[in-house]
Length: 230
Ligand SMILES: *Cc1c(COP(=O)(O)O)cnc(C)c1O
Image 1 (tube, protein in one colour):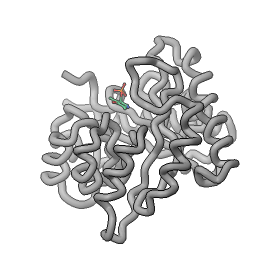
Image 2 (image 1 turned 90 degrees about the vertical axis):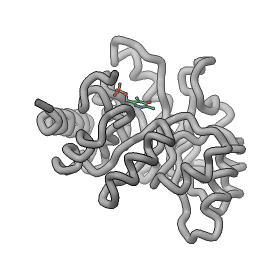
Image 3 (image 1 turned 90 degrees about the horizontal axis):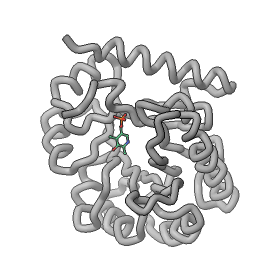
């Protein structure tokens, strides 16, 4: 027996509650159902419960699922991207959340050239300055965004972060807050959409409510929705 419907309801209620607590409009926050290693039947079930947006980490796995599930789904790429896979990612996904260097951005841009379809992306920031994590360092974000402005087929809609994994979600709050403050600064420079329209992808199963309180517009939840992955 799967609890997808109940889990979705509970997550949505918690998102809405966290938003209201800080005076935000709950409609401004979207749930990205993180479906890596989750079988397509469970994605179908989530879709039948109204969940439309899914996040995948691995290109091969995603390609198979996207082909099998067909239209009516929206897909975000949230994994580590290599520039030689840019064309494939640009062909499969509606938005790429993990752009963190010019080479990858250039590959995505080229893949959409002449298509008439600008690819929305997020800039991944290594907000916790962890050596093992992807993402541009906060102080390097401005320079990279200036370079990305020269790519006509990409549109940077906001920031994505994976803060340090900490048991206490309150301990993660300062990283979410720093992300929002960085986004405001970059929006003031004209490098991101204005604050009300900037996307902030932050928060996972253990800390998405805190992320919403700090301004997340996309929360990426896997385990709390589909259960523990193998
Ligand atoms: C796997 C993953 C998630 C979801 O993590 P859970 O703890 O299962 O909710 C979110 N974001 C990224 C980038 C991931 O790789």
